[in-house]
Image (cartoon, rainbow, N blue to C red; front, side, top):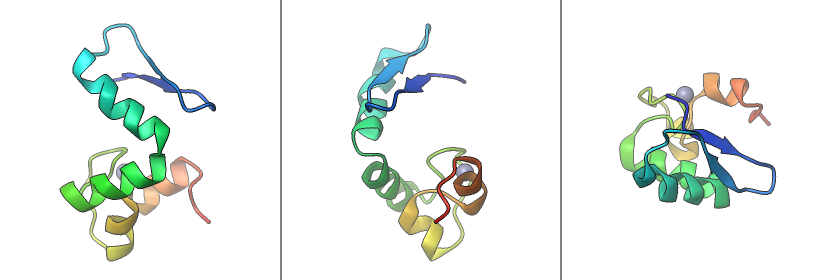
Length: 76
Ligand SMILES: [Zn+2]
């Protein structure tokens, strides 16, 4: 479900009904998205955006797969 937004200043703004327990994790992501995504990919083997299994070393090291990279404008 939709949990909230992260503004360009890096502040997480929870949506109505966002469980309080997810706020610290999402604020951590907002504070340092690249590091948090990398950490998540390494720890879980899953994409930080869509939770699909990551199958390549590149995706695992980034924390997201090529489809989400394209969808979120993260391709270099
Ligand atoms: Zn994904």
